[in-house]
Length: 162
Image (cartoon, rainbow, N blue to C red; front, side, top):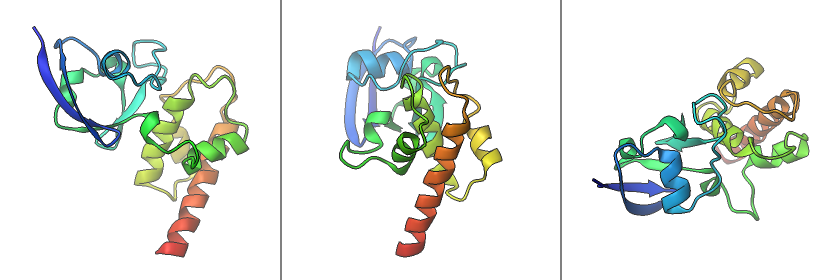
């Protein structure tokens, strides 16, 4: 039996009928067509499937899709336009924090949640926020530097506009 799921995904009202056992990750990828969130471990261990639900990071592989009814979901596809990357995306490129790219969407989502909540974060807070994201290609140093760089940029923007 399927149930209606009405959510706002990346700013777009979306309705889809889903079985109650389906994960948010599967619905996003298979029914809605958003392939940015990746299935890495299917056990909430790697963070490759990270999305924001009402601004909070969740592992979409173990989050039931029906739990998001009436809520706002942001995936990597909704973070920015390709011609104008989010500061964390730009900083990851500039700091060399991207290698194969498989984990990058999840890292961006975790970092974005942190920066939205605390743009003046420190290194310990960055490491804690990224603790649920595994990367097999980097040593994490460049990723942490990128998040701190993005935080500085966001603080500078806030200082010039606020």
